[in-house]
Image (cartoon, rainbow, N blue to C red):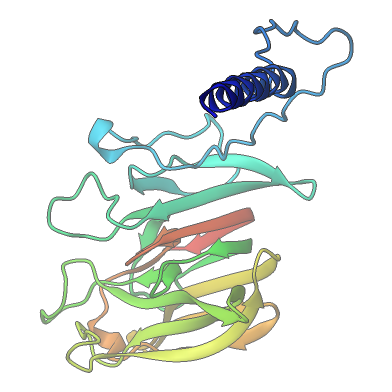
Length: 293
């Protein structure tokens, strides 16, 4: 019995050793360790990644000095540039075979004024005209709007100082503001309003201004804009101070209150005010005329 038991143990140990050897060989065959291979660079035609398109207006860092009144030597748009944004310079680009001046601003990008004034990149049309019957200042252009600030942005304004005090030192008495129209989550159009004074020196906060809806224009499509401000008189007395606009052929007249208090009037245009977000306008075919007797 003892001899039988010893022989059985030898057979068992031999059988177990054989299984371990087979398993070891199988493991090496199924999971070989492959040496690292250097893959050569491809030869022949290679498809390169496209170079990303860089927007020339993309945000310049205000903390790095920003920009100054910088524009081409002979800009296509009329008027003196007033650049109070470090976000972008005035530039000119081709769109649909037409050369546009570009006005782009961003929230909190006024690097020049320290009193909290809103960013702007506008043009002032000079001279401002005196309150004499028949004097006027008129401006026409073709606009295209890509975006406006979260609460809207101004695209043009009538300026006009007055006697008797009240309001700012250089009041904006009639402003044209574009506000985004959103459809299915996308901006498709812009509503144009006229922000007008109801009293000289009035503000929206004190009820001295109001917004009047004028018209709607499509996003990124051309529309015509015309603005004329001036004075009428009778027997040497100013009877009317007006700011009349025509947008895409539709007229919007406005008689400014207390015309006898006016001391001058004029026009500015471009991008002004952006409380949140950005604004970008394209403007071409600008024409300015005036009479200032």
